[in-house]
Image 1 (cartoon, helix red, strand yellow):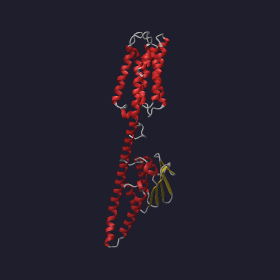
Image 2 (cartoon, rainbow, N blue to C red; image 1 turned 45 degrees about the horizontal axis):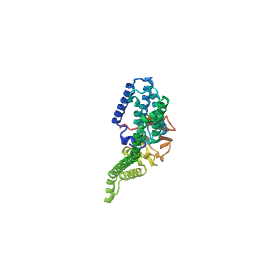
Image 3 (tube, one colour; image 1 turned 120 degrees about the vertical axis):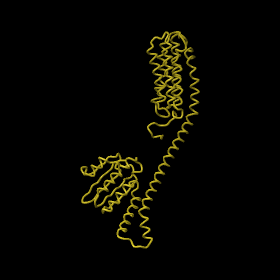
Image 4 (cartoon, helix red, strand yellow; image 1 turned 120 degrees about the horizontal axis):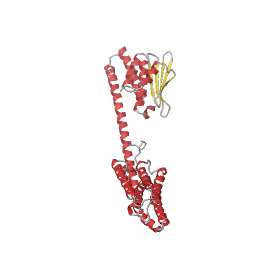
Length: 360
């Protein structure tokens, strides 16, 4: 998986945060949070606000898995950090005074759980602001309800310990994760380069084999000292043209295009091919589309000249094919795959637009 793909590798992949096991644990967390929020309802003023507080925390926890970017962008980190004190404010205002049991403080542990992962996602300052916001809300509530400021600070202060551990954990794991991801990227790039080199070598071998099968018999005749017949001289010209196509035609040439060019030359057509490099960076389908249009043009021509040129990379026009024989017909293949011509009603152009790619 490369860095420029739709789903980008980040620290979540090293920690397995996008695996089925991670989703299973997230589901168990959701069940636990909802159970504690709804079960410890003795004396609760409005259970609906308590349920909404649980939904806020679970949404922030889901964002730790789903939100893209590494480190986590502020547009995701800030709302996630805000969700903890906001959910605390909603839930704590529904509690009886005094509280019925400690389970009614479920929102502190639930908020701490995802705030720890906020550190791992590269937003430790936002995680600390979320925990400190929870402590401030708890202290404000206990002070306002006559229980004393330190009471609220005391039962919420304990969440600083796991967050401190998560902070140090992130400082150790994140650099290691980036190193692992960099090594993965290097392996992917190396494999892609080896595959490209192997494909290029295979294509060169195929071209050498085609040239060998065509040129060897003629070379053996020349080496024997026997004079070439008129037909053999014509064959020499065709082989020389095929060699020139292999050198100048680049990625335009494959077995089918080479055969079409040979037959076209046998009919008296002058074929000129020039690859400017634009096919090097396009996908296989577009490359085959250009070859198909060129092959159709070669099959169509009965005389004159067929000039095919691949433009340099980065141009809006990828390939230009010009047919000259008692008139001119220019066909262009755009970088987006569209086929254009100055004579769109021409039969060759219509055929190219209807079936621009080979069947198989």
